[in-house]
Length: 371
Image (cartoon, rainbow, N blue to C red; front, side, top):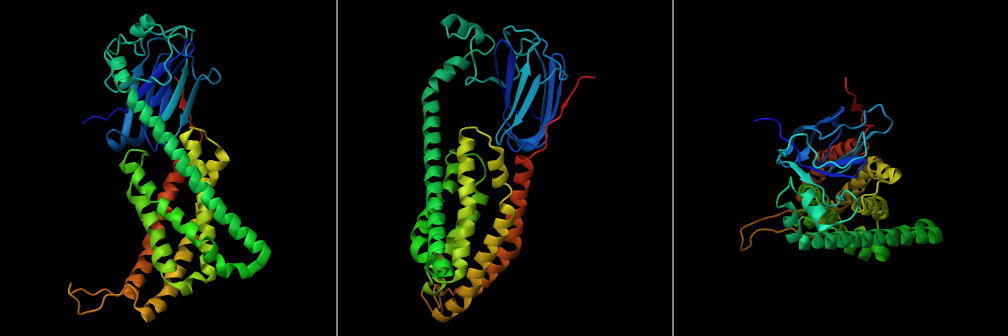
């Protein structure tokens, strides 16, 4: 079996050709641009899963060489790679490829498509679609699908904005109380912001559902583990044990969680609008280096302090005999959970975030020149 080709969506103006390569998690693509040819190879996640992808296109006409200023530009996003090629002469190409046969993986980027004089006359639309029979009709039939995509985007923006406002509120309340009362405010942290934190945490379970319903791309396992782990600490360890609610560690735990989220949610909003703010991206994939370990240390401290409390109260413990003939000892489970959280859990989260950081904060792309 040969190396698969990714889906490539193309559009043009009279001066340039744009290619949108449908690959996720691309780190260092190997791109070679010649007079009328482009070669692409990269490791990424596409229609065939996580694999090596490549394609080779002979273009309809010549393009400007790489050494001619910014003749070729490449931008890498979370879910795609965009390449813009400058035509040697301003002219309208009847098709992208030199050969009349179109590869199955080459599609039209309808979002960027314009007719040759910037108007959408019926005759020009038919001319554009000669090499892609049926594609325009299919697009019209899927008009409602595009409207649904807009609704999804609005929903995601509202969700991320509401979560951002919620965590900013928690930080502001904690900061104002600390300024007024100094360290005396720490013991009452849960009393003043605990309800808000519980509501926001329950809302975060929607982030586990988003990939399942196609609202976002990505896996389900990692967000499920992160959200459910936080929920366990918040509801089972803090909310269920009043003596833990007044401990200083709750203040520091809420502080770590909130700082992480007031960086994460603005980043997601910018991604929905396809805006790249480097300082925000840098913060999103750098601040986790100190914050994640500190947060896990706080969570582990909460669990460790709770073990004697649960030994005393026997809360959540199921003793024999009972009708299910089953026994469960909560303090023992907490000890095992603590071992998993402190070692494999921390390693798993840090490794996952390190891989994402390498992808997001990638070095400058070098486009190979023709020999």
